[in-house]
Image (tube, one colour):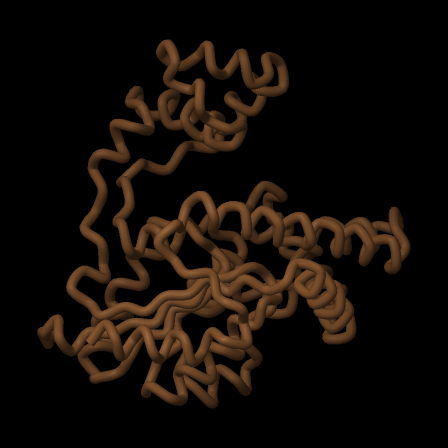
Length: 305
């Protein structure tokens, strides 16, 4: 069923960990006849409900939720896969006359949703291992020498590694691939967007309190079940904050208190990275205090009509 552009609306809610995104998404979905769509790279994994802070089973029943827990931890999910998954979901929601409420902490998903994605092929594991070995032996300067002159001069460590991986795997530069972006999925839609920007000390305090809640809810048992699957430790699900720390506790290397302190430290660092990434990569998005976000988004959605 085709949907006219005038009937297409969307609310986009991004923000750092523990900023209150899920509660705001639920409030707005109830007010705009919405469907909540996940845009968080860890909440896709079935086995990580607690450590990814996925909505509870009761919350998923109370309001329609899409793309939560639909992937097994053994899979190497990607932004490209998410775009493939979200396209028919958006079409279905619009065809039903409802409003997508896209929510999550993975900024790259939102960028791809609004700007399209370069169709870079997956990099084989052996290539990633080879580049990792080069980085360990040669450092950043050595990797830059493996690219054409000046090609990696402005890249940080992570983007430089990615650029070398892509060139090694495909024979083409990452820049070349990025020129072939897909068509953005929100073209023609009326969109309101917000990045939740809590006060940083308050955000850190919420992160610490939430990890304590995760432990009380069974995070240790969740990690135990994950370890029993015997998965590759390099998989994205195995790199979720809390998995490594609680794995060390289960192995007898750390007390639960020490594992908790390490996980909370990693969470604070992750929040800082999320905020920094937003400022540099999502300049068109308004930064909004969580307590003001719902009304701001509703006002902006009406203005976009």
